Image: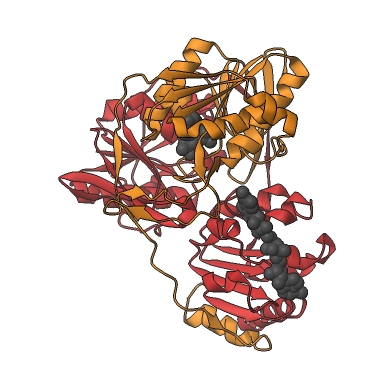
Length: 318
Length: 246
Ligand SMILES: Cc1cc2nc3c(=O)[nH]c(=O)nc-3n(C[C@H](O)[C@H](O)[C@H](O)COP(=O)(O)OP(=O)(O)OC[C@H]3O[C@@H](n4cnc5c(N)ncnc54)[C@H](O)[C@@H]3O)c2cc1C
Ligand SMILES: Nc1ncnc2c1ncn2[C@@H]1O[C@H](COP(=O)(O)O)[C@@H](O)[C@H]1O
């Protein structure tokens, strides 16, 4: 059996959890087994996971699971997998999933593959691909143990409706006391967080200063996109640290990445080159970023960006 | 405070990525290696700052062959007191974590620091494995950390925000950007590093549960399409009709 942990930060099931269930369902189909989902804590509308292929949805209800502790979640998932007889456990490659994956692998003595980007190959052996060297190569990893744990890279596949809501069953597993005290949770409201964003507008040192970011925000607003930046921009405090994308910042793979005034250094590309479509706006026709771009615009960003915002506005009106 | 900082060796960020032996191994010929930036810039430097503030010691730990000593010496030059190298080829994450856990158990450290991820295999899993093997709390992607007595206050990245939490030592932490600022070793540090102890220990028994079968290069991008900067309507049309992303 394949067991999928569907995350529900603050009680809400997000798109990444639906992708994970879809991944679990397709993997289970290939293995010829069932896919079941598990949710932890208070969750709204867990029954919908049935639509994405979970033949059963279990919930472990316990107040203490509303705060995240990798040690507690690992203990709960390992016991659930054992009880249900699951050999493959699938998580999302989110900060939560990544914090649990290694623990669960160690606890179950299972081979693990973090950040898988395609459905496993199963014929005699079990192997699955993931990006390595910051997207510069792909490794096919063979898992040799009986138990396996995988985390699914966001945006690797689209959630797919294959069934209907299923009843949510309570699963009785022990929940150990947490050794961590969560004091405060600060969420960035209104915006889709970068790792989950499908559309991203990003800018670099070509912006000259933080006072000029209005045109980037206007373009992002018009598109419903999340904003990002290059490393020097975050380092000099023009933009907040969480917007820094690249090898030493956040790695993203949105459907559309628009980069204005960013040269396209190899360390920047490392975090964005898995984006489906890349638009580069730069006044220097020799900027290395053009080599990685789908569409390129050579021009002054202070003219091009507002023009693009207007064009999108016109497009939406038509 | 006894602090342990686990560091890995990774190819320099601009290194050319190629493979040999039927595409089953990373081709290291001509590749420069560095200390993994997360380990060096954030984990190690924050550990040194805490030692300067609270007293104690900072030990560097690496699982790898003798050719890793240069990277370890750099950590000593930046300011660590001593180092341990587990003499083994780091072939899989669980294997490495079992080595780290064995050393950590022996040493009785208050905090075990690792980096957010290694920039080569992008696993981000050794730290969580180490915590489980030691049965300790694990704080991932920490961006700030302070210690008062035996209680640490830590800020960490979560989906769409940050979280502030408290935890008692001992615990395992993975360090992300924000923890500290990069330190460049000075001449005196480099000289002193040569005389600091670097202990080599043998590996404990462990299996590799995963193996890399082959490496491939990602499909190459199609040639860039240049758009007239005066004609953004054309770009919007292509994004809608050709690429279907808006
Ligand atoms: C170990 C290491 C890790 C790193 N990690 C990262 C990382 O994670 N992310 C990251 O981004 N960087 C990272 N870097 C830094 C990276 O090497 C580059 O220095 C950085 O990405 C450059 O940022 P930039 O493109 O904003 O600035 P610049 O390189 O200064 O480029 C500015 C660009 O703006 C263009 N421009 C200027 N004015 C205009 C205008 N009016 N209109 C249009 N275009 C204009 C210029 O032609 C130029 O191409 C790392 C470096 C190292 C050594
Ligand atoms: N061979 C190694 N020796 C010591 N520490 C390591 C080794 N490999 C990984 N680590 C630590 O584990 C962290 C995460 O690595 P990874 O799980 O490979 O992304 C790194 O930032 C290091 O702190």
